[in-house]
Amino acid sequence: MTYNTLNDALQKLNSLTSTGDALKTELVSLVKQVSVVTEGVSINATTLLYSGKINGVASFEIVKTMLNDPNIRVVDKTIAAQLLSSNDFLAKVAAAYGYDADASVFRNLPDSDPAKQQGSPYEVQRNTGHRSHESPDSASSIQATR
Image 1 (cartoon, rainbow, N blue to C red):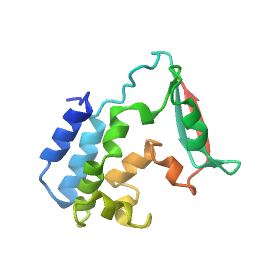
Image 2: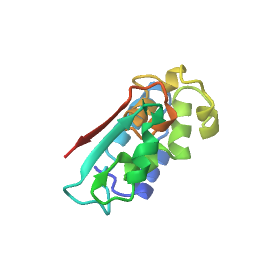
Image 3: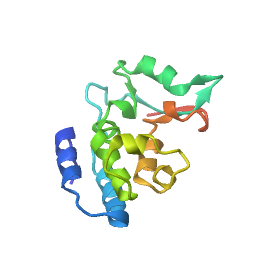
């Protein structure tokens, strides 16, 4: 099933009741089922993937100047990005790692915490580029593909 609206994805997210590793698996599975279609963007739009800094400027600062261009597709414009940055999603990730199910608890974890490392549902979010503006030590790049 593909979730084409944020409301549908949040309903599925909030229906998840497992814990620990089972919840981690369910979160990753859910993320893979959420639409990355970008409304209001040309079918032939250039897709930008970005991370890190370029000449000392966060790549997000460069990309955000292009967010309203219908010929540019970035993950920030998708339902998936909205889900991944939602308090509900971050709270579920925190719960999956044994913390209180609270987005603010998760946000205050150090980047070295396992909940924010490779293989975590949160890392799926980071790999989308949506958070890259908050990760100044990541590799610097903006890639364009069609």
